[in-house]
Length: 615
Image (tube, rainbow, N blue to C red; front, side):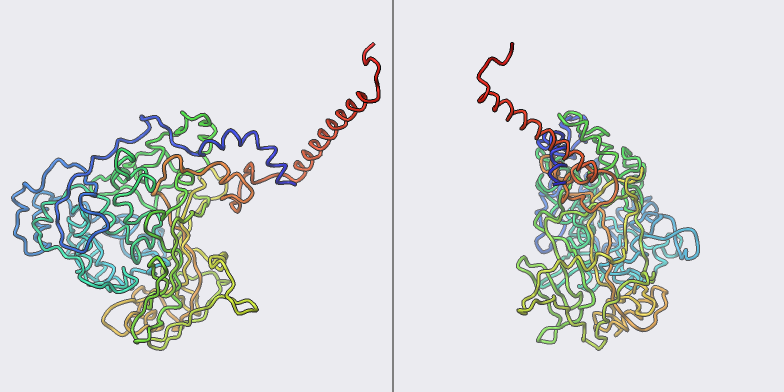
């Protein structure tokens, strides 16, 4: 009854808006950024297994220099170091600029270094924060740095510091070879364990680049393929970490990303269209900025360019319901309505990772992999149980753009539920937990994510409901079961790979792997391992859908809509006041009763009174 009344009361307001998408983009050409250049053919720099897209499908921005004409790049070159030396004969300030960036130091704030324990600065960045994917970098520094833009593999953290001697070099081709194959080949030569990036051990040759001169002569501005060589495969493989970043964006359809799709259907953006660069400092970071901080800021001011910096604060002004839609902007981030789902291309994204079940081996006494019908690994000996989703609907939260992180060794709350420790015997692993069964012995359908409803956050956005600096924004929520110190509940750092017996993937022994990892991270360890459920938020900013695919009004303005569980404010269609509802219902009932009584009286008088009605 209450729901019916609410719908009656707001019907007039919603009917006119329902025909129009909540946040349809304006058709005003002046509010649309200038498209990037048309794709240009890329030089075949690599001999490698087939890439997801052919080189001629890669958007290569135009450059003021044709590097194939430079005699310094004609070669022959013996190794990558000689190529970089040739690049730096002209670009001689490049290394100094890169040494101070987060891409080189893996530390935020940029310029910070060393241990700040007890100080005023909290170090963030990949070298310092914990996560629910590959858990921590400090305990696997020699493997992780295979993916470093220095192009060399090293295990001395001093090499991240530009003031140390010798300073690690920079590898120009990692970012500027347009096909992205150089980056993939270079990482494989770094020697990291296969499981760092693959759920199963790959068959066949790994990528390699034989013609160094051709690679050097192909360089130019960064491309989506070059950036994606790292960012599309972060934390364990293709699409694993980011639901809105994967290889589908190398050459997407407009329905997947209207900005990155090629003209005429899309705007033809490359990554650097929004993530602009000055002195090799690339704009855009999850460690600063946010949906409500100077929303019309240009990219070079620090954070990446916001939607409003191109589309203005009134992007819907040419629409019939434009003023009403524009009124949402001070409370709702543009991405909330214009990215209705992520991983809606060919590739899925990982949504759960249970490390506690790691270690089961196959009948041949070798590591095993189980897959679903789409070919995604649902269990891997080295990684445990894995969950995937396609066309994933984001979780909506209140965000002020500030992410709170935990570090390896940070304790979880005292009330955090601990899960039984894995079997610490060599190649033992943990038994897989089965779903509850009904009386007939059949597994009951259960939403696994519900077990994480009260789990602590590894990384989460700050932001208060309806606060001036907060907006409703979309995130991907990752659910993980991670190792912790059984006594102190400290998040465990784990040594995954290496030559010694302490490495997890050598003997599958949690106790020795955590002990070695905690020592590398400088964190005390009690000697006993348990597991805990944790969650983390991952921002969503890519895979912007066309205007006609944006959310409609009813997606949020309903009692069971996307904002049903989000606290804060009065939302028409979702919220109501009980007394007001009953008062309105009473008035409506009285009105209907009066109309019916009046009609009956007129009908009765018409039948029983035959005389003239007036005079």
